[in-house]
Length: 73
Image 1 (cartoon, rainbow, N blue to C red):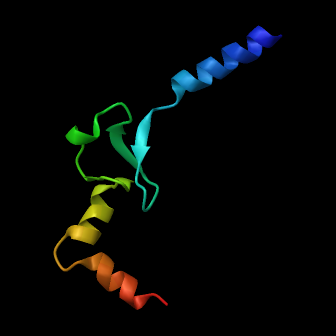
Image 2 (cartoon, rainbow, N blue to C red):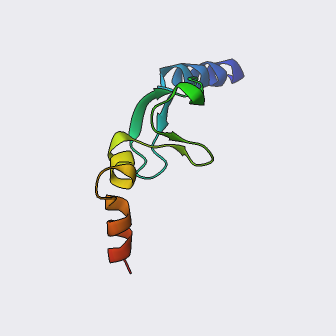
């Protein structure tokens, strides 16, 4: 019985895609967790992986994130 439980766990673990998620919006990012951070696009040290949309909103033209944050109360 115990072996069946372990086998089910391993099958589920293998089927899960090991990719990063954006630390802001939590969307899946097509970057492997195994990729060194030095080679990643849109990685912010001390924060984590950021998707293209959130990166553009923060660092893109017009600083959209700052405008968005000022409008929030």
